Structure formats: structure tokens, C-alpha cells
Length: 149
Length: 149
DNA sequence: ACTGAAACTACCCCGGG
DNA sequence: CCCGGGGTAGTTTCAGT
Image (cartoon, rainbow over all chains, first blue to last red; front, top):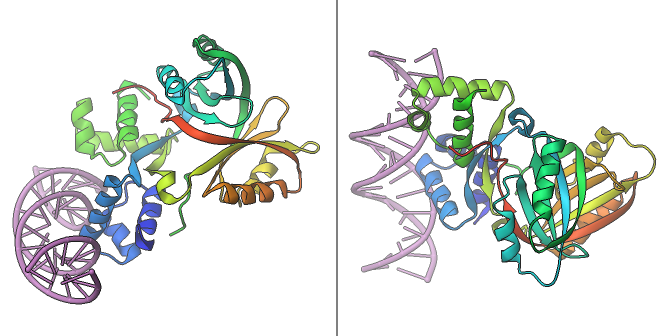
């Protein structure tokens, strides 16, 4: 994981469909050399894969919310994950410090769908209370940004 | 935006570096036909682009937090965005309903870096108060999930 | 269907341990 | 002597028209 790897990662974050030759030109390496590095980055887990960025609204998922989840008793993170994983509206979930046990990022088609998803979330056995915050607009959303290159 | 488009999008979300021929085989279409559809999906904004999924920890960004931002007076979303955009630690930001004006997702190298980013966030003129919640672990993180295919 | 380009493999070269 | 990393060439597949 040297400087060249960082620049390769930056390039792929900017456009995952860049050709190896194109990346190589930017980092002064041959295409096969770039491929070898990319393969290694995938093996070591620095790169997890390549994905398309979709516009949620265009797919009819225009409503989102962040939900603080409070649990009863001591619950292991893994058990929370197991219960959240089946809910398709759960985009992301984190255990957190503070009063809440977890923060869940929900994405739904509309308010009614969101309400429905919230009900199913509250129906999860260990959940004692939820505090939801509806997203009005997305100001910013960007990749982790390792370094410009 | 028909069923075939949805399956193409699913495929690209799963692996943005799939070849058109590969996708075509999955959806029973020729490679050029798939390309035409992908180009159209990009033009219409359903697809925003293609990116690499990086492991933040592997890049030395192991600490994250969600921050409720409270502003003084009435501030337009666009002005908030303008002030947050220069902060590299801001991964995402949303205007929200409820007491807070915005939720900001921060990613930093460690607790000290996070504290530093928080200070810079609080230094933004219109910010009157922040409530931060540190992420202990990531339970789940997945694409918007249009449909399995 | 055709043309140019890209991916992939194999093979060779160099420098450091 | 071996190992890690890079370059070059030839073949196959893919992208773009």
C-alpha cells in the first residue's frame, strides 16, 4: 500500500470502469502492472469490489430516514445485525456510543413505505424504542476520498 | 425503465466491471443492446456512475461519527452544503426533520482526527450546536437494492 | 459484422535480501 | 539464489460503430 496504490484506488473510485491502460498512463505504469496491483488490493481487502452508483429516486426509493434504535438489555452487535439483515429497507446500520444502541439508515419508496418499514423494525424482539429522523434532502454524498489523483 | 433495465442495474451494482457480453448473457440480450440500455440509464440519471468500494479501515479511516448539526436562524440547504463541502471528513450530509437542521456523517483516521474535524465543523459560522454520536462498529452497509437478478 | 482496443497470460529483466 | 515488482509480446475477448 504505497503512494501508487493510493492513486490507483482514487482513480477506480472516480470511475470503476477505467481501463488498466488508462490508469497506468496516470500513474506511469504499464497496464499489466496496474492489474497486478489491483488484484493484490482486492486480495488484501483494501478494495472490496466495484459497484454502480444508482440514483435512488430514479428507482423509486425517494424517502429515507435515520433511526436511533434502543434495545432492552445487553444485546451483541452480531445479533442486532442478524435481525436487521432481512429488512430490505435497511441501507446501513451501526452500533454507536451514547444513549442509543444502534443507528439504522432506512430507504423507502415513500412515507407510507417508510412507516411500514419502521413498524417491522420496531417489531424486532429486542428493540424497545426507536427515534426516527426523516431526511428532507441529501446535501452531500461522496466516497471516503483517500486522496486526489 | 423496464424489468430488463432493473436486472442490468442489479448486475452493475453487484459488479461494475462486468462486461456487456456477460450482462447480456444474464438478461438474454446482445452486448450492443446492453450498452445502449446502459448509456440510456446514464443519460437519464438512473445510473450516476461506477465506483470502487474501498475498505475505509485499510486506508486508515477507521473512525466515524454521526453529527446532528443545529444552526442559528433560517439557513438554506444550499448554504449548508457549501460550507460542508470543503471538509474532507464529511462523507455525507442531509437536512432532516426534527430538532436538528442537518445530520453529517464524518469519517476520520482516529479519535483525534475526528475531534479535529468536529472542531472545524463547529467553526462553520452558522453552526450553533452539534451533537455527535461515535460509531462503534458497522453492522451493515449495502447498495439501495433495486431487485435481485 | 467488422475494426480497434482492452484484458489476460506468459516470459524476461532488474534490484535487494 | 530467490523473491517482489515492472516491462514486453502474443492471444483472446470485448467495446464501439
